[in-house]
Image (cartoon, rainbow, N blue to C red; front, side):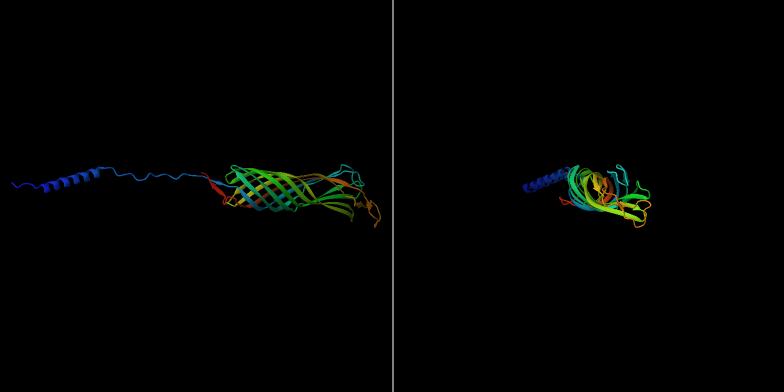
Length: 275
């Protein structure tokens, strides 16, 4: 009988060992891949911080009370004439906001031209003679501080500060076709309070609706160049001078405007991603 050589025996053992190793490896579980981490949602918050400028348009109501403080040939002391004209106003605003989410503070200045003008007739003590009061504000200006609450891209705010009004006051005495007129122009100062809501349409552009109350207090003016023609006087009769006619004028204005603002963001963008 032929003997098996030692080399052949070693080769068979090595081959069998390799086959057993391969079989064991096939039974091992496949290594898992890297774990999947879903993205974390971070909400975007609108940023109101920045310097801005814009335009506005709306309507204004003037409430003037003209009081004759001294008895004259035409009016008793205490006679009041009330005017409440309303018309279009429009202009520009500029300011800045600083947001400490959700609170916003800032300051703003406005300038608005006015088309408001009103005249009221006051019957006088003289037959056929009337005295007319006219108030015509030409422009309004304000300088205010602001404080608000930001609900993401909505800003609810209040404001208050100083106000100015440039106005023409006219007293006109009419007696038939003869008239006597005096005009006084003044820039009055007072205070304003108001508030509104602003909506951020884009990172830099926003729209707003605002209400403002402007109070200029009471100031006295002396219309001392007025005169009238007595009833029954002949044609060409010189005017009878009234003399000193001091009148106090209490003045308040209410404005409702809509506007657009363009903001130059300090942080380089109009939205912040929370962490």
